[in-house]
Length: 480
Image 1 (tube, rainbow, N blue to C red):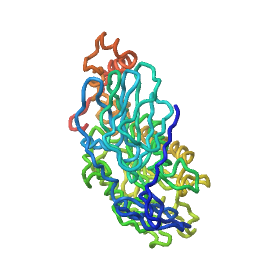
Image 2 (cartoon, helix red, strand yellow; image 1 turned 90 degrees about the vertical axis):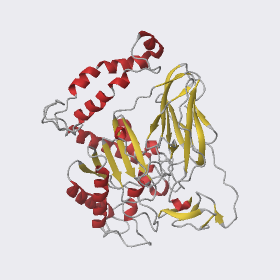
Image 3 (cartoon, helix red, strand yellow; image 1 turned 180 degrees about the vertical axis):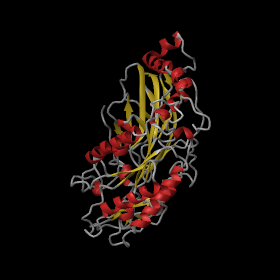
Image 4 (cartoon, rainbow, N blue to C red; image 1 turned 30 degrees about the vertical axis):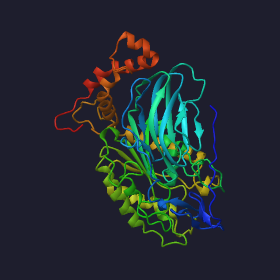
């Protein structure tokens, strides 16, 4: 599929002022550091500072709220991807989006409002993404020329919250909307600019923008794809575990993590049970360890304590998940000084946290990157792809080692957190959903003819439901 690109034209401002999202500082920068009204110059890295609305404390607020109704007929339901508040339908976090299945030759995703600058990927039937580097207008449509048939459409946000947000409306089609089936595995990634995909599509030296951020090509998204899992990214450039980059004294990531959407209030996320992840990846520390010319070096023991506290708080919501704590490719043992040995120091601080936490928590090392980097020395696509392979291996290994000792999910001695038990449990709960076609009709010949291969696939899966339900037997007193 072809890719489309649009360029954001900056509105003229006074010569001495930097417009919203423009560069206002960084090593070697000689331009103005004065932002236009309503914006504050925020340090994003040692090499780049940016004029951000509201000082980067929250994402750009939306001016229009979305309807919660789902119409009938030629339009219908979609599935949210990532952490999206269903009450607002606002895509804020990187990687958020929608997925839906339709039968026809064209479909369109309505946009209730678009604020700031947003880049997205539009993927049809698992093909190459159509890149929209600056979302505008009131809808996003599938490319012309689709054959009349059943198609799966995925829209994902490439850029992060600080650049802008999108409120989605209804999905419409010239045919009918089907049911979109979510993967049974789920992964959550918590992090900073590395997990966002900051500057991933650029070649240093370059200036980061919504257009060159590419969350679907980050290590976390690629790992989820390899594991055939849904994924959610809660990440924000410049944020840290116990302190943000430079002199940024706004809220830190553990607080942001409690928000449903990035625009929502603290503690607004409800941690719905049907969204509980099997694996949680935490990649924080790059900004905590940044100190050159701005502050004292971090106390590693304070970082360890912060990690222990954060993981324990997440475990109160997801006690069955496996946790993977990552080091940073942007930290090395030779910069700023060999005495700092930042990569090793971070690794040791994480290991100390793991020792204290125990259980299903492990370290995943991300070696210091090479000289081929994205904007402002961030990991590029190749570096992300290489680490995705490492993360996939770690997750697979963790799940394998937790298999039931007897290989039988109803064995009273079985590990209730095991991979097989969890899969059986989740699939058994979905049995009845598998038996429903887009028209709300259980398996019958008429429905099968109308839904063709997609319906046959679902029917085949559903046939195993009685066996799955039988295998999912919980001994008394064992929590599901």
